[in-house]
Image (cartoon, rainbow, N blue to C red; front, side, top):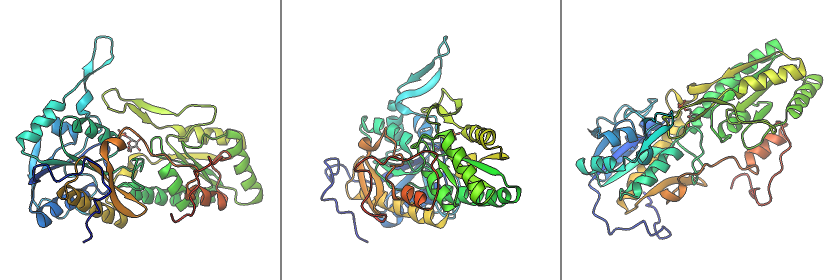
Length: 396
Ligand code: F6P
């Protein structure tokens, strides 16, 4: 094993702190395939390689606030590698520094700072550090706990793949595989009926799933939040395709996509959630508008939470094993408050607090955007790549 080169790492990396003997692990935010594989890697690495004790915290930050913990043995972590969901449970509402506690008489949400309860849980369970498996919301919550003195190592997971600092998050590749498989199926029925099939995928404000599944499925049009689209451009593209080629088209649209002159479509506002906006519904709008503008028959499919379900594909199992292993290894090498990330295919780490509260959207100079355009995919608008946004090579 080649340990991290810690020479370049920041001041929060030190051996001066008490030794790590007992760690807690939790999964927070929306679930995704690969969480169990990550828990397995954390638990087994901690026990087999470093002789640590491991404690599981149930339902993410909610369990940390409520003190719901249980010991995890290597046996508990056996047989879960390929299983979807999370054996510890998760929660995308809890927010220790700003926990929703109800509505005031005017119907406005009331929040409380419950970080002291998280610290109490950690002290009661005698945890020297926490491994927190989550997305950007989770890392924001974790960074507020760091302010209260906890030592937290983050592992990126989210189908949205939008965590700053890491080129890949656990769950993303499986979500893309699921979406690609679904779009492939829409392809054959679209062809039979000469229809336009619109497929809405998740991703919040980032277009990674739409872009990657769109390319993988050979979709004709990819609409993503990073490129506000123009109705005329989409209609003209589909019309031209019908005149010169096949009489059907596949459109993949990210839930966060919006027209240049319009807003994102919000499905629901959940005031009890740390991130109250739930996007959804743009697929139906796109299908309707394309039908009206082209006269073609259109249908919409919303993939929804299917993208988060099921077991992880092989690549996600490997990723999860690497992330779990490196998280515990970094901790044992003295890391404090770091986010384990993958950059240019190598595992390394960044400051957890600096990576929180930000989202990694698709840069317009991303090589995959360029490759998609090269093979004739429309993004529903012309793309202006900002200077300096274009990587030198597609394999950088
Ligand atoms: O962040 C993951 C994600 O699946 C997003 O893609 C989606 O917008 C959101 O969570 C859905 O949240 P919920 O599970 O609360 O409906």
